[in-house]
Image (cartoon, rainbow, N blue to C red):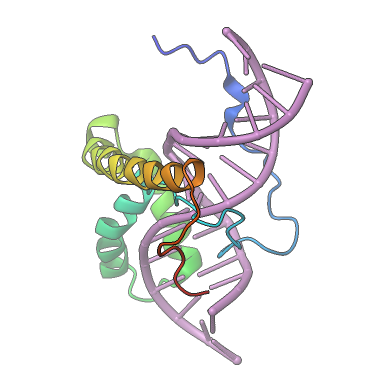
Length: 117
DNA sequence: CTTGTGATTGTTGTC
DNA sequence: GACAACAATCACAAG
């Protein structure tokens, strides 16, 4: 069984403190953006269904409804979504590699680093 | 080695 | 463009 000794891995319930959440300023220059979450894929597929039955539902409805359904799903139902997440993880891993590569190596040089910003 | 934190992802809708 | 609840995550950092 999965050693879940570390149960408190979850974030504190209060994260919404103040300012600043979405679109965070990347602290790292080459920020290796992590992979997407199963929820992300789940929403992509479900957003259509949710909206189909809740054409009036805006963000709040969809968000809560989506989350509720998500928990209702079983692992097998989440499987496809999770699998996609895993796949994306590989992609993210590649990003990290590139990030790590530049980070460590260095040389300075030139190259094209950066684009614009 | 263990634990925690932060940063990130995607959806819709409005100003 | 940014932010709002909802959920996952998990790579990295620090002790």
